[in-house]
Image (spheres, rainbow over the protein chains, first blue to last red):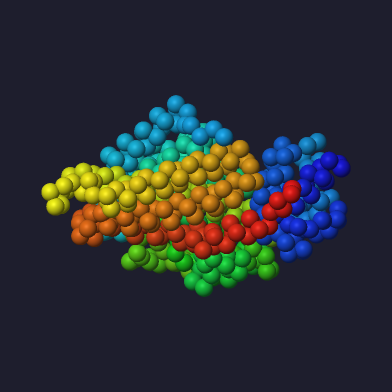
Length: 77
Length: 380
């Protein structure tokens, strides 16, 4: 889990000079535009070898580092 | 990075080029002047699998990889940008449903799109909202297992032909995407003739007045749904446009080489004049660079790399501006002949300029490229 969080933070850091806490809302921060959001979807797919489906496209699955880890772990079970 | 086409891709490219030369290019000026695409052409495109080019065979698609799809767009763009626009829209909506649609949406629509039984269009832009897509004004309201749509959409490519629209609207202040069928009561379609370029693309304005759409027609949910749905669709569209621009630039170069090799002035062929050679050199250089950027973005997209978003922005920005410059040079080289409706180079210029506006203007591309660049942490 620690490794996943580090990878997610490293990805976000490529676009946003801000250290997100585990439960800090990525979208409410105002840093994430629509293109970064799509890149985030592509990142979790390519980095963690999962496929984000239609039903996964909920804000709560992408809103925080913890939420992203939960989504990745749910999709890799 | 690998930049060489496979043997299969090279063969497919030859096939696309021959089809474009035989079936589209001879009629492209006529399509432009009549501002319409004939139904026979639609049938030919469907028969060859181009309308479902990127769809898997399970949905009656051609199953093309993205490089091959790019080559198809290049050859269609070289012959007629309006035809390329039609094929792009069909594949753009198909790609969106394939990527983000529900299983029932895939079952219901994809085979029909691939076969040409359904013609698809993408309805995001509005009379008062273009680049600022996040603030579209079309309203979506819930109504007993369905949604009610009210608003207007404008500059909808192939809107006069389409019978399935991927429409974007605001639901409770959040953005969403829905599939709207042409025969929905309250939907009226108004042709928009006389645009500068892509005149045969049959643009339309859509008026949505209390249009009722089943809730199962929503693609990707509300809120976050718009982000991947709209952005990935636009991204896919930009990729197609970028390759189409490579095609326009190629057409400009080929026409210019042909003309300068046969026309003499001051006792010499035009190609012997150094100022002509300078324009040809610029056209060749920009064309090669645009093609490489398209290939790079295609490989990145094919492997699902997040960086592909940025690569496609760069490719579309460069290729569209290069196509306009190539068309300006081609007209300059052709002189008065280039201004004539009897020669396609004037159409290339009009179409190239459109490419700098659709799927994001040149200036929006510049802003996004810079925004991403400044946003990068160089130490990461």
